[in-house]
Image 1 (cartoon, helix red, strand yellow):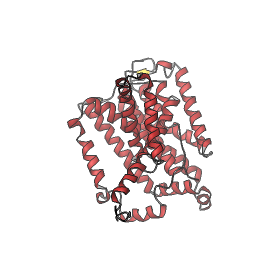
Image 2: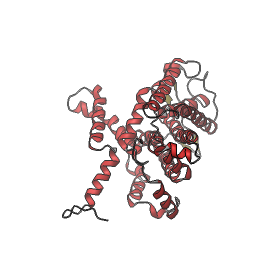
Image 3: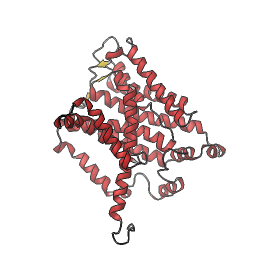
Image 4: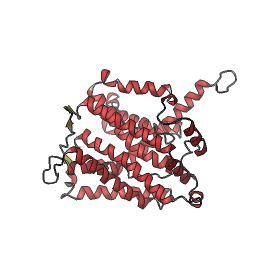
Length: 357
């Protein structure tokens, strides 16, 4: 049984794919154009803090959650190793590039260090997927959680390669074309472009023959195997694609923070990514970004809200948990389900109770 309902029926999706190609802009809803224009001109009105610490961080976490959503929504594989994949990419950028620990970092230029870091992250995620795809349900969750925990303890206890508990700091974002890409506005646009490309890539892959076959494997793996499809190969390939998205996000993450430590890939952040994906909604690739935006805002302002009402600021995690609980309580499909319900209610005729169109 699939974890979520099929986002689109395979046959219907194939038919719509024949009518509308991915490069045709006429099929984009007006709401997407409005959101796109707002994000494009956000630096005109937003401060550097909003651009880098709120929106850019949301894009990065949304990309990592998107990689999990792709596996869970289209492959019925809930993976808790996606944050670890991003952390591996972040560590590799620091190791292959430059950091404050000269005895570990190799000093490669960023245009070599970043692609190699992403490649290593993809290999790590693919190998993790090769171990996990032979299990199903709770066993997939447990084996990916075990891989995430093992990697956390490895980097925390290894000082010769990962610098142990302290991690690697002073990892600088690149400066090229005369632009410092760690500055608020350039880094915001860099994250926005990467997030948009990741979103479009998932949309494209979902409608591709591979994506349709993966959804068939999700719904009925035995029937797909009987039709001649290699179920295991499709699942491993899905992990590789998801790891590519998470790897890119990991590079952006270390450039944003300027450092990476074992806390980046701890079990807590791995579970946070799952919560972000579920709260945002697993039915559509936009859901993880909505969940990430909610998570970042709660994480940033929860402490101030508690202090303003006279409560201990250390309890901000409780407020975050309550916020997520409220969303899931009112909608099993997360924020996407709430939005869909409100949209249907607005279209309903108040006299007949029927939906327009």
